[in-house]
Length: 506
Picture: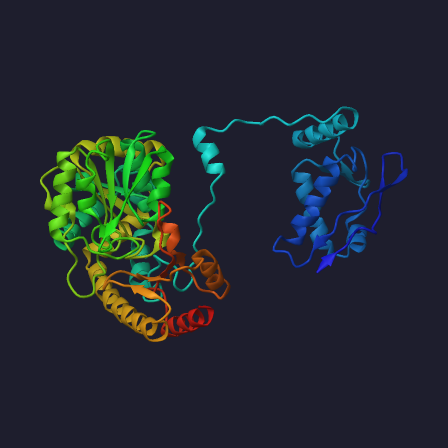
């Protein structure tokens, strides 16, 4: 409902008691998400900025304004109090509330410009403050937001998280004074030691606590790699299709991104070897070998060794993103590339977003010795320390065995969800989609040829379902269309409803 003030004329008085009529207030929206108090406050500020309420004018009483504007008196009182705090109005005991004689600078500037525009030809406004090149680039981009909806990729099953155990550990740590100060910029030492133990046994990673840098999730980890290892124009080899977040994080250094195609849904090592001369200037290879994102392929051990040898011979870094390797359903997780080489050119990256929960915002890098100092200093300069409480809780969660038990439990549940979802798609949508599903991870891909998958994604969003358009993961025009669907945070009913909806739409 829009309440129209266009016919309302409010009487204001100056110091000499002369009544004057001020032009009407604009309409305001009772159904808006913006609070009514804020809308009315903005109308007052706007009238002052436009010079329609000038210094010295006395406002009607709060009771009178409440009657005129047909809103509660309490709302008007809160508006007037806020205007006082901001310096727009002042009160005199026994006399009333007046428009201030000393209007804040931003309003004075607005008035001056308004008056000047009446007498002079308006000039094209110059840029107020120049942004950096990065700032100008960021201004043209949009923030990617993903609500926690069923089928949103990357969201784990939050309902089955061991909340009681987690909260118990939080309570044990929250009164510890040592966790209230600063700490090693590399991260909380007990957490790094816990990771050494866990990653050595589960992923075959070879490192010491000194090699681990705790980061604010995978985005910061990739951003640090970009800033420390790449200059503008340097060549980056990036899986195609590949993880959108990595491409965005790397973009801050403005590299030349060379897409690397997939073979059997994993990075094509043969393609890189055959194009060695073309790729000679490249510095970093970004890859997800344990479970290619988003297509789900597993890079065979022989190809891993060939990739390591090629990168070593050609003087290149490998950034190994091990984002959800714990969730292989039919076999144990494949050993990480980092532990397969004696060469010091593999940077291993992991995160707790999918194994625990996204809001934790904790990740880590396993760094070769020569990269520890520059990465640590860069993180210290750019973001400083991370909160110690969460790091301490995660350290205990791992060391007390809760982490492994949680992974074992979720691996079983995700397998059941995966098999149910796969069966539904194959039964109902068999003639309409091509399912690309590996027995691993928290999502699957359905290829739907000759469709606008962005529009399809938006259509699902309207019905309360998350997804990603498959085309958005490609770095060039040679794309496939379809959907990336995260099944981890879904119920049986969710999966049945989504497949039924897709059947109707397609």
